[in-house]
Amino acid sequence: MVLEGLGENLRHTLKKIANASNIDEKLVKEVIRDIQRALLQADVNVKLAIQLTREIEKRALTEKPPAGTSSREHVVKIVYEELVKILGKPKEMKLRGQTIMMVGLYGQGKTTTCGKLAKYYQKKGLKVGLIAADVHRPAAYEQLKTLAGQTHALFYGEPTAWKGQEADEANSQIAGRVAAKIVERGIKELKPKVDVIIVDTAGRDKLEEGLIDEMKHVFEIAKPDEKFLVMDAQVGQQAGPQAQAFHDAVQVTGVIITKLDGTAKGGGALSAVSVTKAPVVFIGVGEKVDDLEKFEPARFISRLLGMGDIQTLLEKAQELVEDEDEAEETAKKIMSGRFSLVEMRQQMDMLNNMGPLSKVLDMIPGMGSVRSRMQDKEMEATQLRLKKFRVIMDSMTQYEMENPENIKSSRIKRISRGAGVDPKEVKELLKYYETSKKTMKGLTANKKAQRALMKRLKMDGASLPPGMGGDGA
Image (tube, rainbow, N blue to C red):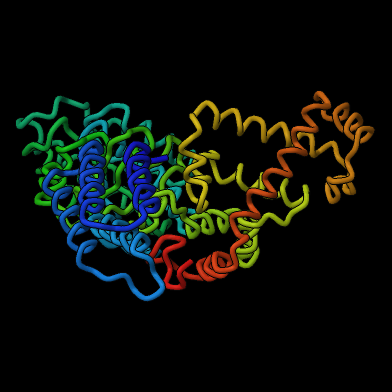
C-alpha cells in the first residue's frame, strides 16, 4: 500500500493504545514519541510533525471520552482526526466543461498524469482533449499522443513547432510564445468537441525565471479553471518550498502526488498542502492509466491506519457495474461469509477487475493486518493461485458450484481432469472456500458492526473511519 512504512508504524502505535489497561500521561507521551518518529521517517515537515503531536497530546490528556466510548477508543479517534486535519479538506472536483493546466518540474510524472487524469474524467462520462504544450522535451509530444490513444482522448500538438533548444534566458520568451500559440490553436480545435481540456506544460530541473515566464504565457492564453501542480512523492523535505514557489507563480489550485505506491516516504509531498493551502486532489498509485485516485483525506488516513475504506471499495464496484443497487450489494457480499462457490467466483472476478489484491485488502476493514504480514511476492503468488482456482471452478457443474459441500472423491477426480490440475489443487480450492467463508463471516458476526457497516455503505462519505462511529461499533 502507499506509505507502507508510515502505515505500519502508526498501526503498531494504535495497537499499543488498544492493548493498554488504562490511558495515562506516561502512555500518551510514549505514543506521541512513536507518532513523531513515524512522521519524521516518512519525511513529514518537522515543524508540522511537532505541531500535530502536540495537539494530539493536548486533546488526549484533557478531553473526556463521549458517553459509550472508552478512553482507548477516544485516543485512537483523536489520532485519526488530527492526521486527517493536516491533509486539509477534500477538494470538490466539478464534473463539467473546464480547462486544466498541469505544471511541475522535470521527472515528476506530469505527462503520464495527464493521461491518467483524462481517464478519470472519461469514467465520469466527460469527453477529454489533451494539448501537448511542452516545447522543450522532444519525447513529450509522442508520449502524450500515445496516452491519448490509450485513453481514447482527442489530441492536439505540433511536433515541429519548436526545435527543443536548451531552455535558457535567451530563448525562454520565444519558447513561451510558441507554447502559448500551440495552446491557443489547440483550444480552438478541441473546445467544440470535448468537455475537459488538459494542457501539458514544460518543466525544468528547478523553478527558474524562464519556466515562470513560460507558464505565465500559457496561463494568459489558456485561462485555466484549474492549475494542478504535479509532484513526485519522493521529493521529501523540499516539497513545501517547491509547492510554495509554484503557488506564488501561478496560484496553484490543487496538487497531484505521483509514485506514492513506490516509496516508504511521501509525507513531505502530502504535508506540502499545509504550506500552500492548495489541497491534494489526486494521488498516483501505480503505472497504469487507471492508477489515479481521487484524494479524500479521511479515507486515506482510515486506510493508512488499517481501518479500511468501504466508500472507495463501493465506488470501485460501481465502476464495474452500471446499476448502483447492484454495486452496493456486491460490496456487501465481499464483507459477508454467506456465499456458495457461485458467489465466490463472482467476487473473485470483481476483485480481479478492481486491481491488485493488495490494494483491495487495504480497503477492507480488519484486513490491514493481513496485508501488512504478506510480502509482495506472497501477494503475487496468492493472485496467481486465485486465477488457477477460477480455472478449476470453470470445470465444475452448476450443482457443484451451488453445493460445494457435496464435492467428494469421484467429483474431485473429474474436476481435476477437466481443469488439467492435480486433485490436491481442487481440495485446496475447497479448503480455501471454507476458510474464506469463516473469515469473512467473522468480520460481520458482531451485530453492532453489521449495523455500522450497513449504515456506512449508505452514506455518501464518512467523517470517521469504520468502527469509530457514534454507535460504539
